[in-house]
Image (cartoon, rainbow, N blue to C red; front, side, top):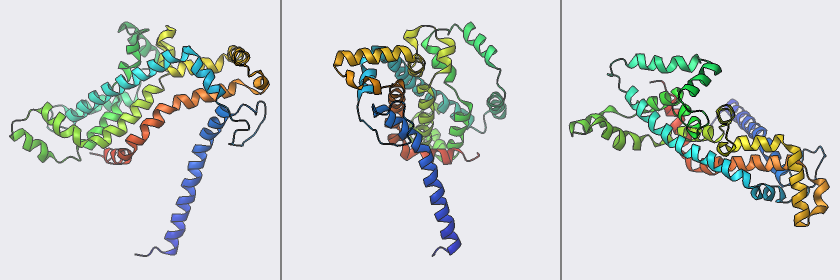
Amino acid sequence: MKPTVSERIFNIAIYIFFVAFCILMLVPVLYVLKKSFDVGSSGELSLSLIPKQFSLFYYRIILNDRGIYRPFLNSAFITVVGTALSIFLESMGAYTLSKRDLPGNKIFIYMIIIPMMFGGGLIPYYLLIKYLGLMNKIAVLIIPACISGWNMLLIRNYYFSIHPSLSESAMIDGAQEFTIFWKIILPLSTPVLAAISLFTAVGYWNTFFSAILFINDPKKYTFPVKLREMIIVQQEMQRQIESMLIQTGEDTIRKSLNTEGISSAMIIISMLPIILIYPYLQKHFAKGIMIGSIKG
């Protein structure tokens, strides 16, 4: 059926809106990317997205700093382990809650929803972590974030889209609940698990507040904490840059360098893992969120 004039105008308006929205989201990222490559615009206020003098110097500064590798590996470790553990626990919890004949099912649902709306506050949370003996341990960056009530309910709603006859057939053939969950439900839940994995991985990778609050040992700092240090301690960074320039014989560009460039390079590096992971999960993303969001 041919669209009417009003439908065409509406479609054009939608396209214009989303193109403008994409530009609004992309420009800040492209500006930071440009700053990370530009060594020739120190002190200049410019909205250009093209580097005035292209150089990989800021990235070389970062890669030559051995202090960033340990925080990077710490963040990679808590992201991989935390995401795997979180998905496993949340998917099992959601499978249990998807059983409508489970005794006390509604009570369990309320026990998940109420803490989502009413938090205990920072001081009780700090005391809980302290008395659990998790202070200054990597586990404090993984365990408290393992279970998300919102994610669990999202996965549970997706399970409702799987026809119960599959589980019933397997049960007639003698399969136990865990076998049904592992061999039937999980393989059919790839879209929602991929979407939740991406959310969870981004959350773990950006772990900052917990690391500042509970970690005292610099060897256990996460990458965002290291990024904060490098941005705040600008005078020390400036000395490192000048020292490296003298050592490498690039003293001629010293006056045009600034700490914004190295901060921008750090931000780009911190974004790379998520940018690399997203294309593999993108095809499942929309389907997983849409079906999981339907009220069960």
